[in-house]
Image (cartoon, rainbow, N blue to C red; front, top):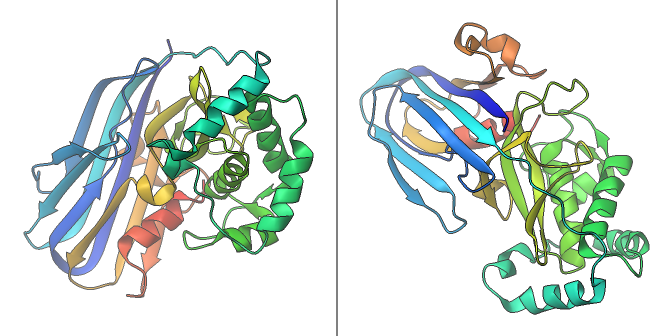
Length: 318
């Protein structure tokens, strides 16, 4: 079983003293039969108590407050995770029955949330493509693979052309974006044919240099396959998300899975640094080197965007 050591640092540097900082963190990896957390070390400025609970989607969520005046807030999560390869679905058994099984899930909790489509101006064009890509005898697994291939082939991976606020309309017009955008389009396609689809945040841990998002925060989708369960699909890399993908959280979209978000009292001007390292103990001393082609520092100068929005703009550039 592969084992990975991952360090994820979020650091806020404030222009003036900040206080009454209240934050929510989803930095606790999913624990199930295919992923186990060997150990986790979580260090936060001021050593506040972190209270945890399990949210509606099964994610472990932490919350903490830091009331004392401070000019720096650092959230440093270090995890040791082991993963296990999951066998792929049987691809061609009883396709008609599988589609019938999916049809029955349309009014079953929790699948209802993962079947809701987001309306956008290009939905009619996408529906035509979905109908063309789906072949008569395809199983849900075949369809998921085919849709993943379509997104990979027809959308260009470009950092910086979208932001956290970019809607499906603009992504569809640009035919470009990053992992978050690719996952969003794939989920929309899957939901159009009644395959429940959910968003996944996490890390991709592989030495293959051609893998987009390697050594950084990453996002992909999961499709529900009858008689199998949730299958991870990474349209950014056109692959099945398996033992090299470490899962942090799942939800309807990225807002359900945000690693860090919060509010504070103080000046709106601050600097945000985010660094992620995989299998490297020197991330604290080499933060600039470990942001995987992204700038380690983002300057926030407008009160119109809060720290959560700016954090997500950095995260989504992977």
